Amino acid sequence: MSETATPLSAGIDPRTLIRPEIRSLIITTMRAQFPQVTEEHAELGVGQMAAFLTVCATAERPLSPSPEVDDYWHAFVLNTEAYMTWCTEMFGKMVHHKPGYLNPEEHGGGKVLRARAIDAIAELGFVLEPDFWPEIELAQCSQCHANCSDSPFTGK
Image (cartoon, rainbow, N blue to C red; front, top):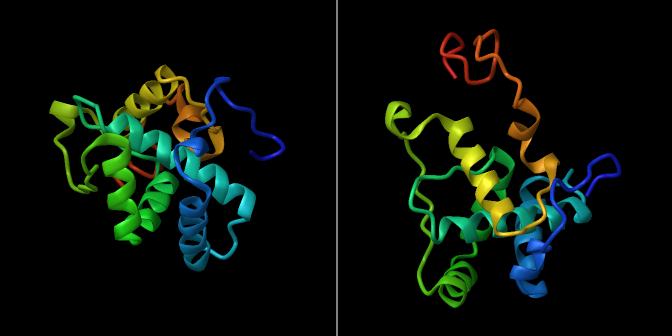
């Protein structure tokens, strides 16, 4: 955790969901792509990804990771054998990465899906690291679409 961040909930350290040698593999993959990421930050990122995947394994509605948590998921998926083994051992099945468009009318937009993920992670008692979930900071957003990264007016 960064010096300025504090966990939003005290609880289970999600890094414990992944054995150290697999965490190291994911961190190595992640840091090869993003060399500016520190070892400490990457350790926390792997934990946030593991917590997210844990809630995905039993979710009845779609969830979405933050962009950074998704980067860690990609780093894990690139190590396909380790990813497949971990999913099978943890959940008895694969948690498939299915990027794509979901109708916001039916499922809510990305922020709604991430908020749902954050709530589910907290409900399971995992520590949430605010640095990895910027939506936590946006609770007072007015939805004015004034230069927001997901504004319909910016084409993003």
